Image (cartoon, rainbow, N blue to C red):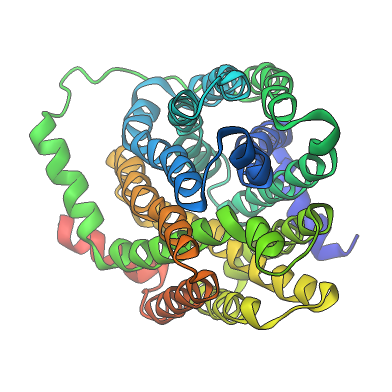
Length: 410
């Protein structure tokens, strides 16, 4: 390990924080990886319930839309209950969610179970972000990058294993069996993440005033521009990740085991990029990293329809996964420039907005695929990613953003 890498690891592990970071990372590995199990076994789910691509896209959109709707309430709960309760509680409830998915007797129940799973996994994200920000104020980019890289590893390994085992075990056992690691991660998180004392304010902020404070925070250019860009990037990724495996099987003619490997490479590329992006942004600033990553992702997604061989497709898909590096960099940036007094509530509201809008990516791609426009859907996603790259070029530095916030407050 290089001296620089040892220095970063030492800063993240110092003062006993290493176990908390590991617990949050493991939890996110299963939370995010579990949500990508459905796209990984989508051909089998479609066969079980006799679905077309449009119906399947709606089911995935419901999962991500309910995840989005929980972000604002979860952000408010962070400020009221603290991170440990929400992180462990989300994992515990997720165990019940995957059990309901695996046991669903019909498509309507499957959609309702998807909605429930989305709601309970939605508790995790805001608490994860604020826990990292509070615990690693000087290295939040690197710490969040490590956690999100773990999520990408889960998103690569769990769908890969599902694709390899689904023919023998069936999708119900694979999805429902996730309750075991969720329960284990819940116990580990409760043990490792320290409780944060949350005191009720003797004079709580009136709801109207709180909404006004959140609205002003979100309307700040330093927040609004990266949030719009992140929404476009997430919309594109939602459409890509929901149907890439199905596209590789139906449009490109790959067998499902090969398609599962290629699908996993999307997250392998993302994990590597996320692991280094936080350090790069801490060293060189967010703007250059975000623009470069978004531009690379746009080019790779746009190339997918024009590539056929497994090796060339593997290279393109891996580069397409690099787009995931925008998440730790953009999230750490936005959290850092939000007013401290409404960080949890504002961050939850922001996450609700961009996840809710982005959830439509699955339905859009599924509908275009049903219309015979599968290739064109990837070009649309590439175009949206290119627009995001242009927006990222206009975000101010953290110091400028904080100075502007302080100036207005004064």
